[in-house]
Length: 92
Image (cartoon, rainbow, N blue to C red; front, side, top):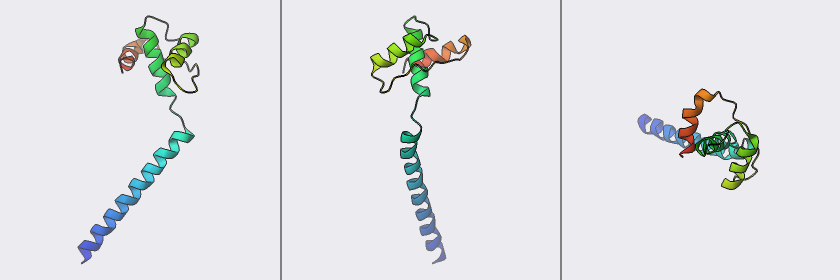
């Protein structure tokens, strides 16, 4: 009997934590929008197209063309050594 009650308690605890996690993820979408991914992706696309990934005009144009809602010119200020990482991100 004690084993069943511990198992039931574990399942209830897991279900509660799962619901808490899902609530937190849903809340994070409204509180902290994803802007870093957009900045890296647009810089990578500009770099792959032969442009300057540090140009705010080119980044904004790429974001608007891709249909990003609320597009802003968020600059990626990484050194040029990270160009390989940017290229890989742009292929996504």
